[in-house]
Length: 124
Image (cartoon, rainbow, N blue to C red):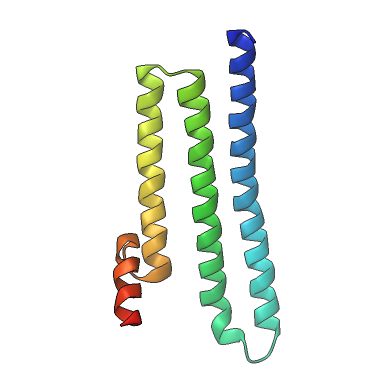
């Protein structure tokens, strides 16, 4: 395979991964709204409708962001590894990582690295 063919394949794989990330985000939003509507319509589960929908939506966003970062890495580093493109990728990864940490704190009320400590404390 020549260089341009490999570049084309890697570009297509990166694009496919990014499309999957966007699909995960979109499906997560739709599923969250459907679950919310179902819980609100069902008697006795209205109090839990908002917190459970928020947790599910947050997990969907986290998963979608992680997949999008993977797609960015594939397309940027494997296809055009210039100093500028790697710098832009680094900024994107930092922003998405910050969003992931913020969502993790919102969902669980603690930093992600504190989960092991909390699990250890509850098992003793």
